[in-house]
Image (cartoon, rainbow, N blue to C red; front, top):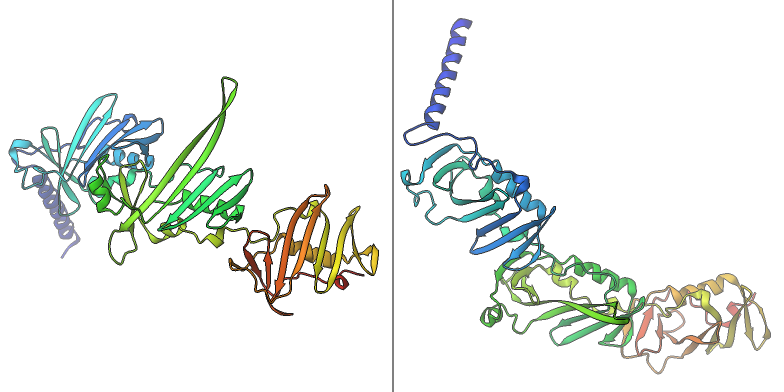
Length: 449
């Protein structure tokens, strides 16, 4: 076989392939176009309506941002919407037929799986999506034409859920400046309230809350996301509310923030609230629960991680420190226990210990004083007990006074034997339990140089 014969056969094969491709693109009643919808300026589209999976959503552009306006208002995913518009604007037309020249039912266009309507300065343009075809093809209808195109748009609108273009966050723009958080789980209620920069727990026990832990809770709530959209309930449809177990929620989280402004020379306070509640299990064994933002018609599902972030253990939010005042404000520390009574006093930056043997005060050992201050201000309880300390344990009282003479804190300390754990009652009825390795010097001899 000569090279000339091989070359002629390759050329013949190429011509046959080209002829077959042209024959396939042609055919009676068919015409070839470059785009399914010609003349779309994707950048000017400012409104998109999508009907899919039994629901219809309308999105509008506000500059570079997008929001859903129907069936309710919420922030939308601008990137996902723009990707869809770009795909639609570049959708190819492999074949095009007049509507009356094809069997619409056979192509799935008698009952479209989805419809989209684009709107902009140039007017509106709609597209109906039919069934998919082999080799990455699909059928669509644009006006009076039925078009064979790629299935790229189907992948975005049919295989996925356009409701995912909604902002999945259940809490909107949570601020660290929240004033109040109420968490309910069944009959149990936990209430947190902020005063200035400090948080307090009002229920189930009144005590100091850990500001850092509350900050982490607020951050976790701001990241609670819907796993999927289950339904959009009509306003006042109590039957569907009950069907999802939301007529008597299994749990809820309510956050509130108060802002103040001047009006007619007077300070006017305005409080805004957001609440999320969850109900019954969506599917047995999945751990998913339906939930909704109160006031919104959308019912969504939440995974176990989202639910856990809205149901923290109360002890995780309690301030585990003995005192919530900076050590720089301490003037004196009075300690009275089985080892005797003594006082530590700060004089011009130097600590002195005063007891029966040193009534005028002797210089205290700095490392031991530092250990005491760390224990009072920084040590975190490893557990907590509402039952208090056993009466049989000996108690040591610690009273801390500030430079203005005010008592900054009064503590009662017990210990489970010479090498056991420490228990500290800070005056709130809660016994904070600390590790046996905590350095808490309670004897006067430990401070004398």
